[in-house]
Image (tube, rainbow, N blue to C red; front, top):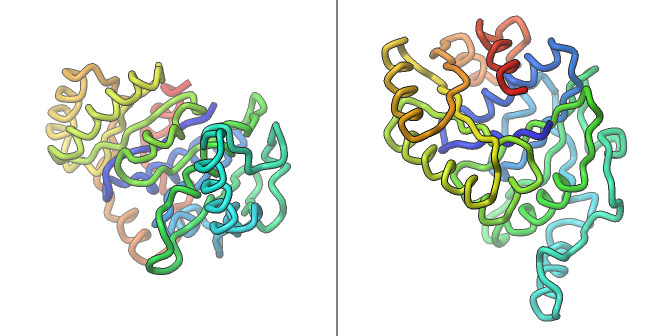
Amino acid sequence: MKIAICGKGGSGKSVVTTLLAKSLVQQGKRVLVVDSDESNASLYLMLGFESPPTPLMEQVGGKKSVQDKLKSAMTSESSEGGMSILQQEVLRIDDIPAGYLQTDDSLNLAAVGKIQQSLEGCACPMGVLSREFLKKLSLLDNEVLLVDMEAGIEHFGRGLETSLDTVLTVVEPSKESLLLAGKIKELCEQSQIASYAALINKSPSNDISEQIKKELEDQGIRVLGSIAQDQEIFRRTLSGEPINAEKVPPGMQEIVQSMF
């Protein structure tokens, strides 16, 4: 299964991605986490890796190389959607070269690319590479892909979700987050993505969780569950410590099971 983790900035997408990954590994799955957020800097620390993997963008010649291919596509009869950056037609997790993949038993991390300096241009090359990589990646029955998307909804315009099975929206206690969840539902339907759901995060109380759940369900959005505010997880993300399996909050296993 290929799952996109979406949401507004600050909603806790990377934390939720980490908690899902740890829970899936506990259930015997082999997990590939793809960092598709060009501004996220700490996902690898949350997952427990000492350093991030080399971005896949470097494997295909760097951002400028992809930009040049984009320019060529725009000046020819071909389209961006018809571009091919990766040589392989089908990719497996084991095909990702050493250095471009951080691995700890059944937990794996890859990263598409990052914004490294000012004035380096738009993030379009990262979007093009992400879309092709996600489309060509083929999973075995016991493997799960989790994609930590960039904040907001721009990635829908690039078509990244069209190669995924499920879109999961992380919703924090704010009206902005609720409104964005509704917009993501609308975009999923426009893209003919049949499977989408929401997960409430950083809830301060059961009453707030129930209020958010009702508002989401009134919009026709299925709610998988709620994760309470956790001071220990907050402390670990602040200090750069990993979120270990024993720190996964109660109820995550049930949330994971409801996704399949």
